[in-house]
Structures are given as structure tokens and as C-alpha cells.
Image (cartoon, rainbow, N blue to C red; front, side):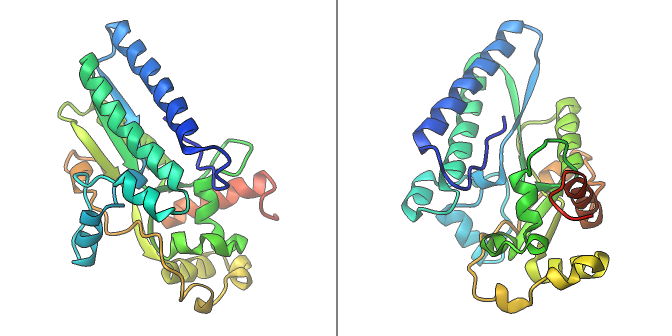
Length: 253
């Protein structure tokens, strides 16, 4: 289930929730009616995990955030956070997926990817890839999303879905997060690997005072204990993203 990030928040939260939950119910009902579907693998988002008092406390104490944490939608609403309706919608919809699947007798497994990047085939600029490319693009509004965060390659996300569909003991939620880094580390990486963009990368003054939207300190132990292995690092993520951006005219060749 893909949800547009809608950074401009052009639609009210209740409209998003109604549309995606209605679609979700229809899909799961069709799966149940088929009598042949044994397991459904649902695509959630890391945004459904870390935004709660309990998760904040765990992170502050140096602990890892795992699948047992759920975003507190009322907290997100009260904070009026950037992207709040998306966060709320993904959280409510994942909970609804679990409940509806249970009512229908379906085996449902949730993949929870963090920011996803790499090559893309769609004609528009995927929001998640855009955020990952913010330093190269010079979009200061998204530096806060890169200050202390994580990425996963789109191919690893796809492989995680297939793996959990086939793994006999798969159950519940699985965080899928390939690489964690700070914006300073990402700046150094991009400058070294892609010297043609080095002059575009700002110095630390551009982000030092920003409050990060943190997506780090995540535990992928549960997924890895099933035998899953990540095959792609930052090199593959940015090689693919940059190539796709060039092919579609989002970056100069």
C-alpha cells in the first residue's frame, strides 16, 4: 500500500485515511474471497514506529527502536509536525491492516522500510529519493530529514517482501533499514564519491542548528534473524538514484 508523501499537504488528513483504508479493506477482502491467498505482505513505513513518548525515551537512553514501538497519532497531531497527515495515515492504516486481516483469517506480515532510495522508473521525482538527494539539490528544507537518519535501497525492500512472503515463520512487523548515517557523514560520502557535486554541498553551518527528524537507532535484528541480508549500501543507492535523475532530466548530465 503506497501513500503519497504530499509534502504540501494538499489533502485533509481524514480524506487520506478514508481513501487508503477503503482501498485496504477491498484488497484484503479480495484476498480472503479468493480462498487461495495464504499470506499478505503489507508495506508500512518507519513513520509508524518512532513518534511516541516511549520511543523518544528509549532513543534518549541510547536504546534501539524495534517493531514493538508504535507512533502515537495524537502526539503527532498535537505537534503539528511536518508530514503529520502522512505519518498519521500510515500508522492508522497499518493498525487497520492487522485488525482486518485478523478478522478475515489472513496471515499478514508488515514490512517497515525507512527512507527508500535507489533507481526509479516513474516519470516524476519520488519524494523519498528527493529527500535523500537534498544535499545535491540544495534543498535546505529537507536537511533536517538527513541530519540523523537511515536509508534502504529499493531492491532490498523488494527482496525483503519476497523473503517474508516465503519465510515460513514470518509473523508481525519487520523494520527494513540498510544504512544509518549523519548528514556530515553523507556530505563527506557524496563529496568523495561524486566530486562533480562537491561544490554543491554546503558546509555544516547549513544544518548545525536544525532539529533533526530522526530515523536512526533502528533495530533490524528481527528481519536479519530470518536469514535476510542487505545487498546494497550507500554507493548502490546513490549510484542508482543519480543515474535515474540524469536520465529523467532532474540532474544535469
